[in-house]
Image (cartoon, rainbow, N blue to C red):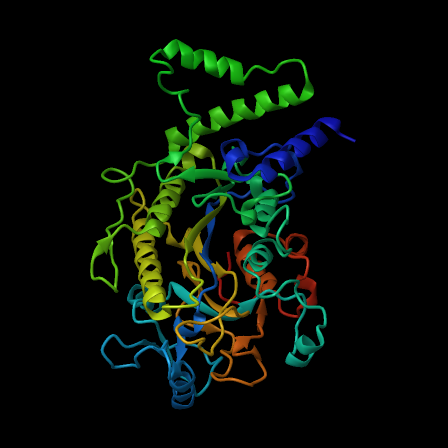
Length: 478
C-alpha cells in the first residue's frame, strides 16, 4: 500500500467533513496520476445550476392543449386562497408558447412561465432544451412498484436527502458527488488539478471526488488567507511571519501534511488571481440588474454574479492550463409552500436574466464564442405537487429541467411530459410525478459529451446499468 497516498486521502476526508471552514484548503490532495481518462486536447466546461428547495416545474413548463390547460386551471385554483395557476397564452402576463421540434408529445402544446422570455429565446435559437420528468431512481419504476415500496430511492420528499441523492446518488452524508467523480476521471487533462471542480456557491457534495477536492471561489474570485497579502498589525513583516508559521511543517506527519496543504492553497490562490479575467470593463462585463416582477424595482441578481465569476475563470483557462472544468452555482428559495406565484415568479425572473447574461458573456469571451464548449444544466431537490395546498405546493418527485449551451440539441422537449391532472400512471400523491428519466441517465448524457467513456460512466453512475437507455440524446456528439 502507498502509505503516503493513504495519508493524503485521510487528510482530504477531514477537510471535506469540515465543510465551509476548510474551503480554502480543500484542494486536490491525491496523486492525480490515478485519473483514468485520456488527456483531453480541447476545452469543455460543465455547470450545475442547482435550484435549492424544489422547483415547481408545473409552473415552469406548462402543457397548454385544451385538456391539459383545463385540468391545470381547475386543480391549481383553490376556493379559499385564490390560485397558483398562471394566466393563459395571450392573457396579460400570460404564459409564453413554445413549439418543440420533435414528436415526443404528439397532439399537445406547451408554454413557459411568463418571466422566462430569455429562455424562450434560447429555446427558439436552438441553444436550450427541456428534459422532461427527471428524478432520483434506482431502476425503472411503476406506480404499482412505488406503492409496494419496491427498490425506491431512500428518504423521498426530504430536502437534505434528495439534494444529496441528486448530487451524489446517496442520502445526506454522502462523501462524494458525480461532478467530483467526473473530475477524478478528467483531472489529468489539466495542468493544475486544483481547478478541475470549482464552486461559486459554497460547499457542494456534487463537486467532491474521491481524489479531487472542490475549489471554492467568491464574487471577487480566489479566496485568500486574510492578512497574507497585506499588512498585519500595521506591519508587512508580520504578514511574512504569519506565512512562515502556517507553512512550517513541524515534526509530525499531520503537521507536515497541514503545512503542505496550506502551501498549496496559497500557491493556488496566487495562480488563480493571476489567471482569472477582470470583472467589468476590459474583462467579463458586469451583469445588469434584473427587474423584480413583484415590485418593478431593479435589484442585483446573485445568480448572475456567480455566473460572471464562472465566465471569468473560463476566460482564464489558458493561464490555468485547464481542459476540463466542472462548476457549481446555486439559486435558492424554491421551497414554495406559500405565496408561490409571487415567490416563484421572482425566481424565474432571476433564472432567465442570469442565463441570458451568461449566454451573451460566453458569446464574446475575449473575442471567442465559447458557447459550444460550455454546457449548463439545472438540478433541484425534486419537483412539487400538482395540487395546491392553498397558496403554494408541497414536496414532489420528478421535475422538468433545462440544458443550455451551443452543443445542446435545443428547441425540443426530450421525453414525454406526463398527463396534467391527478390519479394517472405517473401520480404517486397529489400530482407528485413518478420520474420517467433517472438522474443517472440525465448525468450520463452530459458526461458522455464531457468525454467520459462507457466504462467510466458506469463507475460514476452506479445505477446506470439498470436502465436500457444511457444517453437521452439532447447533446450533440463531441
